[in-house]
Amino acid sequence: MRDDDNTPDDPVDPVVEPPTLAVENRGRAGADNKVRRVARARERAALAKQQELDAHARAIELHERAAELQERLGHHDRAANARAHAEHARKLHALALAEQSEQER
Image 1 (cartoon, rainbow, N blue to C red):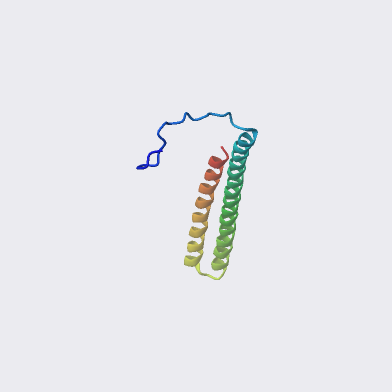
Image 2 (image 1 turned 90 degrees about the vertical axis):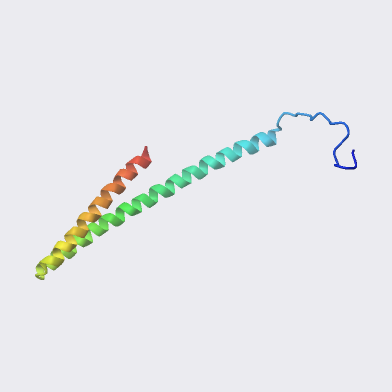
């Protein structure tokens, strides 16, 4: 070795050994873990999308019920406002359905 840079005087040819079974299995296990992580992420995304769809459906129902109540109470302007909110929730629901279809492809 040289004193100035701690490198050997004569370079040694590296010995290339075939991967051991343990290394091969570790590589395969890493790939399997990645596949499982991706699958779990997709499941979580699908669940989240379904929860979003359910929330929009509940919002539509509640706004329609509010519109009916406001109409019966004679608050026609409030009923119209509630119907507008229900319509907005329908649009969001439709967008979420389209996104869900895209995710499933």
